[in-house]
Amino acid sequence: MGKIFIPIFLALLNVSMGQESAPEYRGEDKTGIWYMYFGMNRVAERWSVHTEAQFRYYETSGNFNQTLLRTGANYHINDNAIATLGYAFIDTDPSFLESPLADMAFSGNEILENRIFQQFILKNKVWEFLFEHRYRLEQRFLENRGLGLEKETQHRARYRLQVTLPLTDTFFLNFYDELFINLQDNLFGQNRLYGAVGVHITENSSLQLGWLRNQFSNAVYDRFQIGFFYNPDLRGIFKKKPD
Image (cartoon, rainbow, N blue to C red; front, top):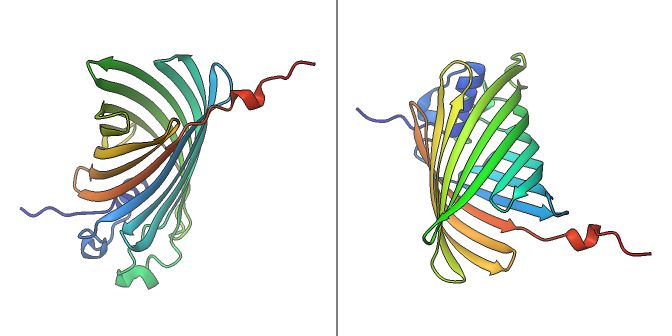
């Protein structure tokens, strides 16, 4: 049997809002791209600020899909354990540009999400492999402005196992697998499998070029990813100067 490929955000629309659309107009044969920025800005011995921005497209040359902005306060228990409380804002256009429905049912459609999350990260090293376990709980407040549906609150748990392998002082490989579990109907949410080549630009910045394979219970799709990571140490700025 052939597989039906559905972009992640139409899948989220179906799960969250109970809507369906013609699968042949979901852009299932397209390979999109995600442009991403991540920052961990150290402001004190135990505290840092997480900053993040992602711009996601249905196709590599355009066709906007989603903007994701996320921030949070990180408490560094030690070098290998970090607890985070954060907030995210997500603006999604679930309509695929080539769809003939774009001027009809999906006209003006927009899904807005305000999200609160709690996160715990554990790190360890085995030989040259650097492991990171990320546990996250999310409270999602969704609103579909295009279809006139009521607001909805959902809860979700996520677990990500990430492995980084340094190749040289400059280059490294990065892999992860992340499982999403819905804490309401339809327990399985999605699974993300990722692989990338990374390069350290400076001591506190790096660039990753990767490939993401996203699987739902009834869909699989692929995305290029370009990620820039910047982790400045700002403790000197916030340190109190002597009188």
